[in-house]
Image (cartoon, rainbow, N blue to C red; front, side, top):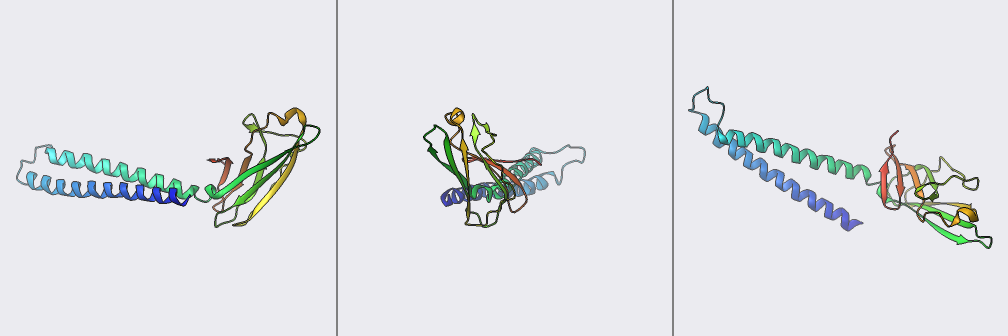
Length: 186
């Protein structure tokens, strides 16, 4: 996990270097364009260096905006990516499934409104034996467990990864299945 974060920051520095190089190129082109147009007639629309400078300025702006947006999105997801859920299963004698699901918060901030639900065919599974527990808060470095029983008729169709729903320290709601993370809209 730390290696991926280091790799992202290295890529970010590489892009920042490209933006800095483009900026220097634009400044050099601008000074050349100004020197070239200083003695030109006022009715002229512009020179090639001036047009190139304008195009490169626009390109540098787009690259900078893209990098800024990507870095902001990564910072927003940082806490949510450090919350994990998994389940252990035991098949009972009658064919039913006893599921113990666990959530661990490895981030540096608490999470709350934590819910973990079983899934069947990729969708939330609602049954009388599965209770939704809300307002559960998990402090940094701590975990919480849920247990539920799935009847024999549904046991074989259950997905291996539960649905985790929680709110992070910045009051953003998230849904996570395995490593797939999605911000929920409120």
